[in-house]
Amino acid sequence: TEANNNEKSKKEGHGAVILHNPNVKEADADVLYHFALNTESHNFKDMFGDVKFVCVGGSPRRMGHFANFIMKELHYQLPAGQALTNIAKATDRYALYKIGPVLAASHGMGIPSVSIMLHEIIKLLFHAGAKDVLFFRIGTCGGLGLEAGTVVVTEQPVDGLLRPQMDMQILGKVVTREAKLDPDLCEELVSCASIHDTFNTIKGKTMCTMDFYEGQARLDGAICEYTEEEKAEFLQKCYNNGIRNIEMESLCFAAMCHQANIKGAVACVTLLDRLKEDQIDVSEKTLKSWDERPAHLVARLIKNRLNIA
Ligand code: R2B
Ligand code: URA
Image (cartoon, rainbow, N blue to C red; front, side, top):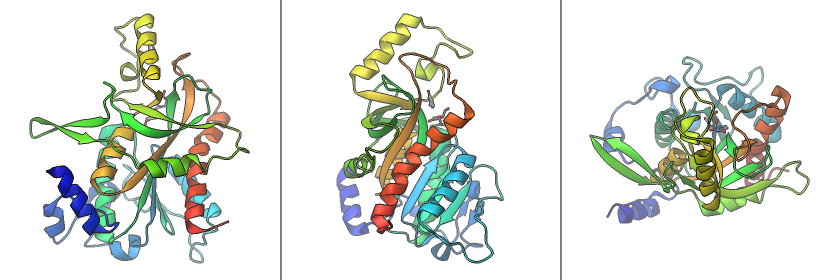
């Protein structure tokens, strides 16, 4: 069965990224179009062979801030005279930064965007021969029954029908993939929360939707064909099922990491309580400080792993 083959190749892989695609493995050259990288013009082993942590988030600017932040946290020195630069600057699809063992990339909004990005990042790591790489998504979300600004670490992503799987349409058929995150990495990330934090960090299920408005039961989109009562009933049902936040990428992130033999974790800060409101109306300053909360947890985990004080 596919599951058995997966287990087998994971044992054989010893922490290597698994590419379920003989076409790419056998090809002489490979183009990562949306990162403007090419195995013929770039030496992936030299550039990325030492990567141990991949941190992804929606916005290119936020990931640029994250790159600067993690550089300070790791006391990482760039070679003299060099500034931190976006490796993918030849394209404006995604941003990509490398800070020693940390790769930081943006993924845009929604499953189609994060899917393209993960295909190319996983190929990048495969070509680079990177081993034992951990993936983190640091993002924003809507919370359910939580004070805004709370960080939710995802135990299990579910789709809009509350199923722990990603359904894709491939060659005219529905292909279902398990959306599994690493439970130990989830615990490790939660344990990076501190009693001195000014925010709470909790574990919960995450609903991953195909849309921000109707897909997340909002009443304020350009279209809305349900009542306020129906909205409330659905969100309460989500809450009763253990769902604590709603965003748009975790399902694909989990499914693709799982397939590639990569341990992944997702931490998102809630920008509002969806049991109370639909519109995100917080100041730019507050938003900026909330945005950084998942990054703080991930930075602590990375520093623990690297034995950096
Ligand atoms: C969270 O925020 C974005 C929508 O505003 C989306 O990328 C997500 O998952
Ligand atoms: N991101 C989402 O996907 N939903 C929200 O409510 C807030 C951020």
